[in-house]
Length: 171
Image (cartoon, rainbow, N blue to C red; front, side, top):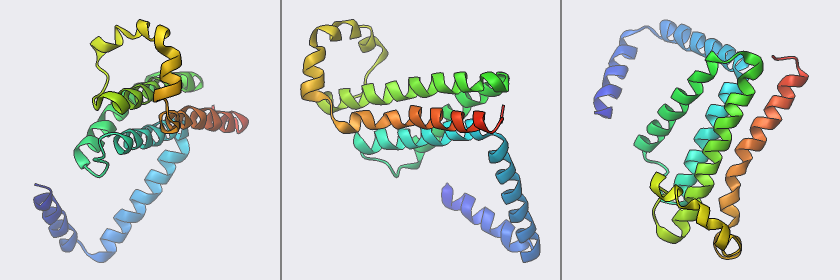
């Protein structure tokens, strides 16, 4: 399927003159550069979420080069992130920060659970999470590893970018 798409793209590009292709590529570069300059918070949310999704896959199941999970992650992140455009720019940080904390929590929880059970946490299992208080010390001493906390960088990156943008009167 991908080969067929790639062949179609090659055929279209070969039919275009090199000058036209260069104009299209230059226009795409200019447009994407302008988009990322004006949507820094969304771009940061998108990139950090994708990196965390890659990390959880790398640390757990190991299929970090498989394209289907990457596309699924990208789709979910884009759908959730796109609702941030309905929020006023001065409140977008709260929206993106909320989802960054949710995604980070999901990554940490799944990483901890996968360490012992070679499976991911389910919604029904989360209902029993109130019992974790009794065994909290054992989780910290025996199960928690540095890689389980490595996902926290997303929240730190969002705060850092927000402070930089606030200093530049971005909002």
